Image: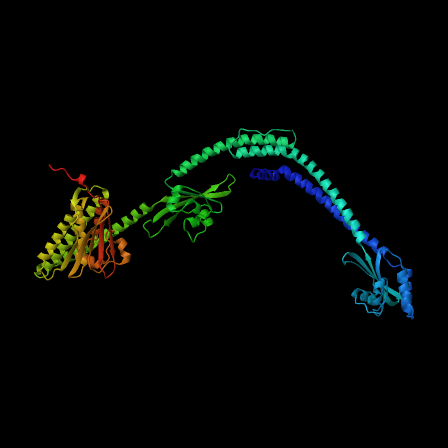
Length: 617
């Protein structure tokens, strides 16, 4: 059934059948137009002839008018006699009405009772009042013609009544239907003959076209081997030869185009830069994978979209962006961890005639370059600022000593002490800078060894507990308590003990510096999947949320005045971050103002099994 339905669909969708149907419809339309006109004229002529056939003769109408005008006692009898004597087989009913709308005579004996009654027919009343004849066809259980004639006397100047005539048109319409049926049958026979001739003619025209259609489908599928068969030397034959030539040229062009496309796709896919091609309206038509990676979008989200929208430029239209051909810098996902800075350059695609058919936008990732430049500028600015403060202080005190303050036994020792402190501070800062420089250049080697992190942290905290005991009787020293939550499980990690001790010392010293007197510093050690996490919490002033992401930057201080007063260089956390990351770990902080801070150090950890135990010597 499906195959039959498909066969029928293919047959009726073919140009051969369409041409045949068009020819047949044209023939039918012509026949129907002629038939409609002929039938209409025949109907109109038949009605006019019938109307003439039922027309009351003038002699009879004059007799009826004279009797109505005489108004004698036997006028009604005379009127009925005239009506009954009138012989016309087509007329089925005659009614005579005077000018007072009273029925005076009828042709049907069954309607004798109506004589003397007033007639309710509005058409009769209209004819009596206006004196104009009315002819109309009605459908009263059959087709009838109504004819109402005015009756006048005195040379037609005096309207004395009207005569109502009703005649059946059934025979007329039966003849018309018979003629129409005959014409319809003849039309169908002509249509069938026309359809057969149309199929024959259309087949002769469409067969070469079908051959070319099959060849076009083969070409669309990439098969250029077949050729169109030539049936004649007319226009269709010439078209077939041209089609064969065209298929050969298309095959060559397709091979060249495929080769160029493969070469272009290879270039685009292996480019380290992103490429976006647009049409002349600025809508993206081609995009390579690197551009999708840069913009963090899918291809269907970019194609046919304005390039200004794709690049996230809200205040610039695509047309202005392309026409100006300016190089711009685009920031993707700003103020996030995935922030990317792209340099976009534009060039127009022009045809030989100079018509601009599109443009090409090349995206180059300059994120690291931009960040490095910003870091270098910030680093130079910070180093200059940090060194300027102690040098200015040194210059002031030395100038004061040079001007004679060295002679004052009360002032000179204080000035020399400050000078020594500032010198030590600069030495510490320069040592930290050298440490960072060695780490950045990769010349700082890691001396890794497996260490039980639990014992290692306990050892470091023992030193701080000893400091608490040593400074216990000194009132000027800050008092604090170290709370340990380390657990008893042995957690073996591979670290550089000296560098990791430097990291923990730095965080502990910061916790002590910024904790209030009598504060508690909590140190925890937990295991999370394949990582060991060391956390150090204090009860200090805390770090504002907006500064949390910057505290590991070089020379960054939340409270600059307080940090310098306590001797900080602003490089401790930056060094700690570099060391932890060199261990393939991660360091971060969590804090709220007024509620203290917690620093976390996450290090890779692989649980040791019994097979991992070292052999005893």
